[in-house]
Image (cartoon, rainbow, N blue to C red; front, side, top):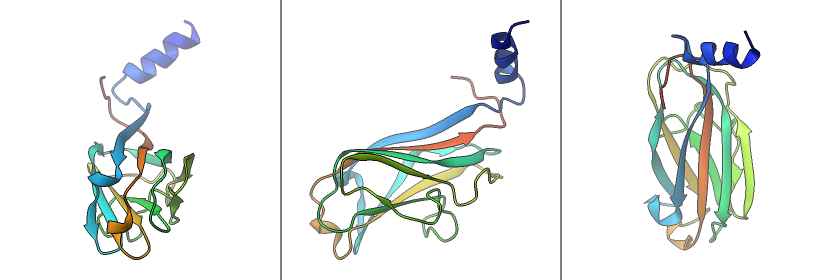
Length: 146
């Protein structure tokens, strides 16, 4: 049996354990204002039984207007749930940036929503440009068919 077949059998098995991602391309206008913050709930969710890895952000149009630091979290208040290792990800310049999860390989016991929050610094209305692709990587412990 070749290595390719072994990998296929693991991926096709009832456990899975394949590398997966939840991703979404977002524009500054997709965010909802909350004083100095822009907030957004991603459409894709992380499935129950996942082990978190980290976040990659590809900024294709810089967010303008202020500090523009992104936090990626698994609850809407971001307390202790950062997928960006408790730090902010700068999205004020065109770049590819990211970070490990606050609890690398932390287990998620239920399906999990991903929340994005950008801190403009003073007033979210000052942000008039910005576009990025956010990718959250995880190991799946369940079979996920394409």
